Amino acid sequence: MDMRVKDLCVARGGVALLEGVSFTLAPGQALILRGPNGSGKTTLLRCLAGLQDPRGGEIGFDRELAAYGAHADGLKAQMSVTENLTFWAAVHGLSDIAPALAAFDLEALRDRQAGMLSAGQKRRLGLARMMVTGRALWLLDEPTVSLDAASVALFAEAVRAHLAGGGMAVIATHIDLGLPEAAVLDLGPLKARAEMDDFDDAFGGAFL
Image (cartoon, rainbow, N blue to C red; front, top):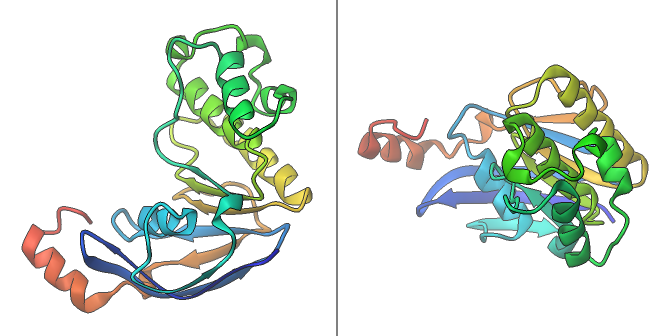
C-alpha cells in the first residue's frame, strides 16, 4: 500500500510551519527529511503518525499501520532489555524479539535493566522497539542521537531489512545514514513564509 501525501499544511501552536508538502512512498522505499531545527520535521512526523491533525491537505495511508519513534526512548527503567521488548511486542500482538535483539547488538545486555544502560544503549533499545511493532511504516525523529558510528550502521541495516520486507520509512535526520537509496525531501522551500515571519517576530526566533 502506497503512502500518498498531497499539499499538506502542518502547524504548531496555531502557526503554519510547512505548506505544500507532497510525496508518494511505495513499499520498500524510504524518505529522509532534511531541514534546520524548528523547520517542522517533528510536526510533520506527528501529523503522519496521526498524533495531531494537519491544517490542510491529504494523507492517503492507514495511520494504524505506522509506528512513531520520537526523541524519548519509551523505556521502563526497572525492566530489563528483554522485558521491555517483550512488553512492546505483546502490545502489538507479536512474541519473537530475537531478531530485534540481534539487529541492535543487544543480546549481551538482554538481562540488564534499561535504567542501567548507557545513552547509546538506551537509544539502540528504543530503536529495537520499532522492529517488534510489526508496523509497515516507520516514522523516526532524529533516531541516531547518542549513537556512535557502529550503531548508526546497525540502524541503517535494520532499516534496509525493513524495506526489503516491503516496509517503508520516513526519517528526520541531520546526518548521513548511509542509505543512498533513500529519497530526500528538503523542507526549507516548503516553509510557510508569511506566518513564520510573524512567529519569529513574536518569539524572537527562539524556535529556529
